[in-house]
Amino acid sequence: MVENRVLPRRIVMMGPPGSGKGTQSAILSEKLGLNTYSAGELLREAAASGTPEGNAIKEIIDKGNLVPAEYIVNRIEAKIIEPENHKGYIIDGFPRTLDQAKVFEEMQQKPFFQKNNLAVDLVLLLQVPDEYVIDRIIGRSQCAECGMLYHEKFKPTKVFGVCDNCGCKEFTRRADDTYETVVSRLRNYRRVTAPVIPYYEDKGLLVCVDGTGPIDVVSEKIRKIVGY
Image (cartoon, rainbow, N blue to C red; front, side):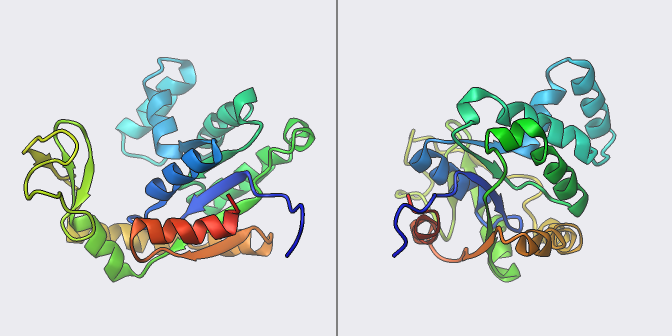
């Protein structure tokens, strides 16, 4: 057993759509007392800000185009440099392309980041087979009242058709949670995001995690890696 080892505190969570990145990031955030940031949420926040950069991002998103890596990294950098995040942070689902990974790396080489030890020290890759992802996504639903998430197979309501949290009997499903859309997203993940995996593996930062099984089982696997 290694004594006094430095525990990772600047974590990137990767994995295919439906692998549980958001769920496990939230659990890590609570356990470690760190903020977690999703690139998608940061871009939507910027688009609604009304700033010149925010307006530029909104225009790109509204046209259905990919937001350049620099814009995304700028939003992440703005969060990381905040004093509250100097103790660590968690980034959910970013970088998604090799270009984003390289721009992100350039950001981490800035003097301020090096001086304050803010560079990423762990990349967790949740690995799940395609059929598992498809099963997870097309069975998802959400309480229309409180937003509680459910799954008809993996996390059903205790009483059929009734939200455990608020008792609401109405549920919604995302319009893109269909078999065809999920298969398309998985193909895109293999084509665009997969090249990021060897990039971080070469840097010695990547640790793979079996993302199948119940949430608490996967969380326990991550706990043993992170050491909280």
